[in-house]
Image 1 (cartoon, rainbow, N blue to C red):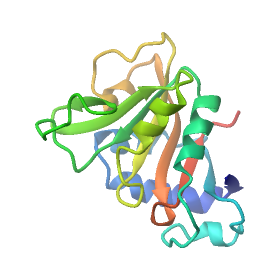
Image 2: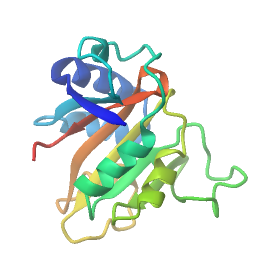
Image 3: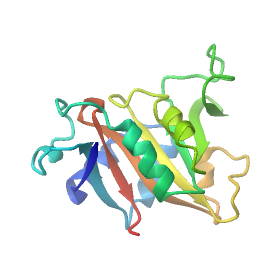
Length: 182
């Protein structure tokens, strides 16, 4: 089971540092963090004090399945994107694998619609190791479609809005979720 602990200011700094090392979507998202509030998503029983040590593991099992459930419930109808910084579009198995990929130049993203399919969201979140360069995004499109542009360009379109950013923390055993207040 996962618990959510408010860690706003410290977590937003950690999040910004993580995005600085990401792909073009991460770099574009960095300027759009105003108004987001952050929480640590960690295994149950983790103290609020321990939850501010984002770079150290030892919390217990990963909460990735719980994160998928949260995203499907809270952001229904939005699009989930996970950067795959070590992948290339011509790598064997990139196309036709277990999850949908979006290739933009040299960048590869795992992508799914948060339409209620918990399995699809979890497969997408598991496409990368959450302990290394793990940056994911939830983008809501007012017209319901993302278009064909690259993900960083989605943020430039008036009909698209960044509603949440997720970065891996705690050696892959938890996450920082920054989102717009409900």
